[in-house]
Length: 112
Length: 113
View 1: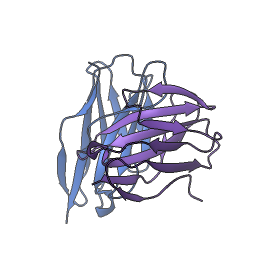
View 2: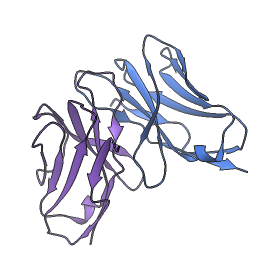
View 3: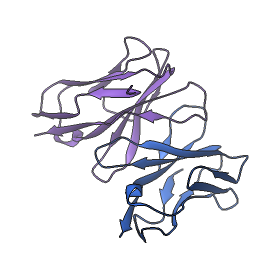
View 4: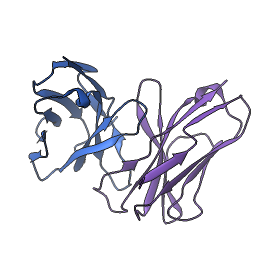
């Protein structure tokens, strides 16, 4: 069936390096994608979103890339900091109903 | 200035009991949701309400019932709790139109013993 998933369940990076978190989706009707960050004991927090008519969008230290040809979404975090440690989710909104379908999550670990 | 707040944060109860989780949003959003996050962190939508009308109902047992007294509140009632109901439940809200982000509360950790 249609699904949104992540390639890596855990990603470990050195502090100061760039992080790249990947996500694959299979629903070609998806037209809106979001990245969320979830810290321990908290709810998912919006990071950045992108619509299907774009292939790149930048925020503060974060960039989202969308490749519709291969149905791939990535989140790039520049100069990773200890506060970036969290679980990151990609999510999609497709079809007529509201709500988001979430991927499985990637745990980003920052090494000092 | 909490945008989406839910109570309680922790809920420990025995099998067979009935419990409720409350949610309120002060963002003026038209749509509210309940999500369930399992032990593997997987988030799955349970319900959404738009202007007091249920518009999504995934394959959730009818022991779960959302109740919305007004568009700023969406409470979750659970009857006859089972061990498998143990999870973290998140409330969220968004604008009614598609293509807008959801804003989440900080979750309610339900433990059924």
